[in-house]
Length: 206
Image: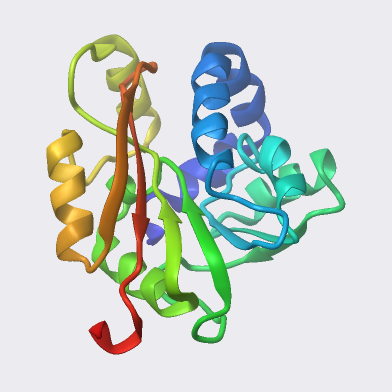
């Protein structure tokens, strides 16, 4: 989890203005997809929330929303923009929450830049209640790719450890123990994004 931390700490102040200028339409689409699975009685855990691109449009849909990130500067930016949301520094691969604590876990655009995303999936399975929902919109290498922007991002210090296409992402999540309910490809920059909604199995796999 530490491999990209310096990049996020360094870019925290600039991240929101850049993303909301270049990818506003994409985030609106992702928020719309996520919103179908979040209800007014939902307890939601957001992992890798960044500076709140999805937190802001979605948190009022839920009964409780916990926004987390491993970058404290990112959370500071989120708190400035949305002080009413509960924020907490968390490592997605070693969460401090109790088992069966949440109805929904949202992790956007993060699994592919984790060295060990299977560890995060194990923790998500643990903290979600049986039958809970994982929302995992993730950039995928499928269709149009902005090669120049990808190169600049890499030079700036952000590394992608996994270059899935939509089928590869679904295969990964299925192998991790989730049952995929929806998979939708959305156009984005520098990469397309695959919105995935998946369910957890009953506790104990029964």
